[in-house]
Image 1 (spheres, rainbow, N blue to C red):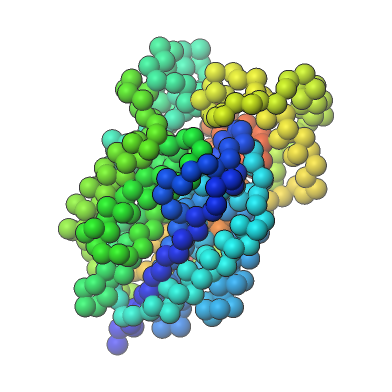
Image 2 (image 1 turned 90 degrees about the vertical axis):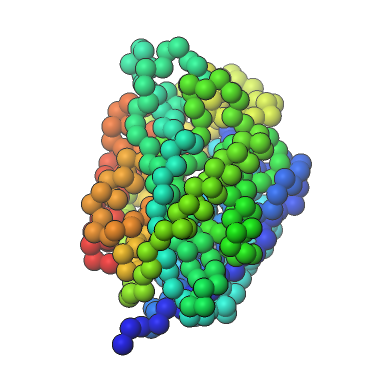
Length: 442
């Protein structure tokens, strides 16, 4: 007798108040507007005695300690085992600071409320369980994804070198245009939730307004077709990927850009929804803990950082991004100097990373706690035994950028030592190997 699949979903508003620090840039940005609301969206799946929760939050990053707090609360309320809960974030750069990274302070009051709200979304998703089926499909959307690292004429590799830069030779790596789509619906045919997996940075808007960016636009459009259901955006291996076409002189920033990309994705997804495979098989989940060595600043790094901090005043600029780093901004060098001193105070040599695999029939999702380069995601997909494999970056913690060994040799923003890039050179290859091991036993 075939086991029954039960599924439920729920979304809850997690929009912070204005005045909160926004995450993702090299400078402090105080939110002074709410462009659209942020949400935590959860889907719970149950087959026989196995239950899993998949959550996507409109946040930039989520630190490990916050994931553990959410799991503790959600498990206590819902009965779902803590290790069976995947908590991921979209990576919006117009959401609140939730971890100590390049700039901005964590608002502990907001984080306390956020913890309860995310746990509530999981609890309510379980309360909404009903008999369901899963449909899976894949599309391709390559018009809005670009490898943001470029080989330059002088032999260097630069992240975000600027539009129409005459010194660009070619992109330094590939992209992954796959649009993996999972529709959860009741046995009566009513949509319950939609899960979208796509690899791209979520940073089109800039400025000081709170926004979910283009995944929010995409979700609002899809709700017109599917009804008022949670649309979960699970970001893929986006560490070296963004939406900027350096060969197009048109400006690609602001809310209009979020709307443009959201509409393109929604249109591509609607096409995928017309041709999907149904799966109803055993639900499995596996986790693995990796202990990855950390890079540490040298004595010379520390002395250089101290000198720079004494010589360069703190920037009053409203916006400092990787584009400014590519231009050699001294203000950003000051930020990195502070990062070096903070890393020098770390009292541990290893970082514990949780890898998580959730499978249902021909579908598998692999959660990675950081920003893996697209090559890492592609390597996992290539060797996966599953017909459909999704890489979920920024899941169950945040250990920073995860470049390939080749990218470390090339240098560039993502490989530069900071709290946002502190794992040792071979971390990416270790993650590929262990992820494949998980998939082969899941």
